[in-house]
Length: 288
Ligand SMILES: [Zn+2]
Ligand SMILES: [Zn+2]
Ligand SMILES: [Zn+2]
Image: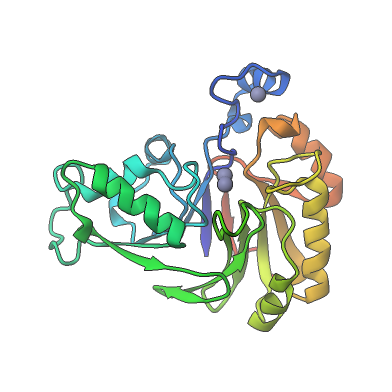
């Protein structure tokens, strides 16, 4: 599977929109990989993991053919992961023209929890010319796997918001040959995930981890210590191998490091830092 990180920043982006803290100022001056749009990731050019409010800029920057997108799989309903305006545009016939595609085929599949569904329905209700027939929404729950084309998604329970507020998920994804873990947004995972993960029998060639907290202690996001602990835990469960790549994602100015600073800090731990435009091939990095 080919993953393309389209954005690797937290909700406020990096540098943050209205911020001039020291690391935002250094990132702005440095440019390049230190500039992070809000997080979302493309899987094999056909499935999008989350819908960033920067999706239009990402389309322009990376030359994406999003008209050919088959599905969007959401982790949760925070606006940096579920952009209502982009959904409204996709629902509006005059804004999203797809020659040669019949109306019955012009349906984008959406997968998300009930809070994602509520936000999606609200977005469509507020759009003047939205046609909800342009989407097919599938509700997902933690620990209930589902398939999207040739991929199986295993939703794990994230530790991001109180469950009563929103039961957020992260995903273990496989195409039957290789697998990866896409773990944002989440803090330290609850123990119930371990038994489920062990039962999947998966071996991740790539583990992508939320590190919005940087060197601060984790909360609803992980910090570096929680990322190290997650690696150890996955090793214990037996779902990774010595060849597994560990990549930090969803980075924020809380971590007080530019891309280069992060890279130098994390290298001795054999941990990589994502950047906007990073391509990862799960087969190329598959464990022996
Ligand atoms: Zn987020
Ligand atoms: Zn800042
Ligand atoms: Zn969030």
